[in-house]
Structure formats: structure tokens, C-alpha cells
Image (tube, rainbow, N blue to C red):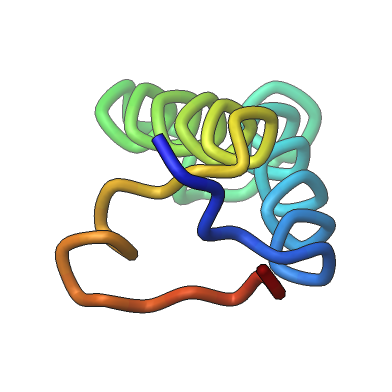
Length: 70
């Protein structure tokens, strides 16, 4: 797996991943009253954190996107 996520993209993914993981449990938004919305938010948050830690995004590879400098 060749790295295809750059530094700025990685930072954005980390922040967004943490927000998506924490939001269902700490916010009182009506959106998260549904179990489905909570589960989707947590799964997407985990995927964002995983792709940022590996510096590889499978969707970027499929679409030929690269945000890192190599």
C-alpha cells in the first residue's frame, strides 16, 4: 500500500474522525436519537481514523487521487 493521504488531509481526517466518534455520546442532537445514526457515525469515525493512521485510502486509489507529495 502506497501512501496517498497528505498531511493536511490526514489532520482533517483525524479531527473529523474524533468528532464523529464523540458526537453521538456527548451531544443532545435529535439526529442521534436514532440508533442507526449513532452506529453510522461511529463506523465512519473509525474508518476516518484508520485511514489517517495508515495514510492510505482505498477510495482515493480507485479514483486516482493522491494528496501526498512523493
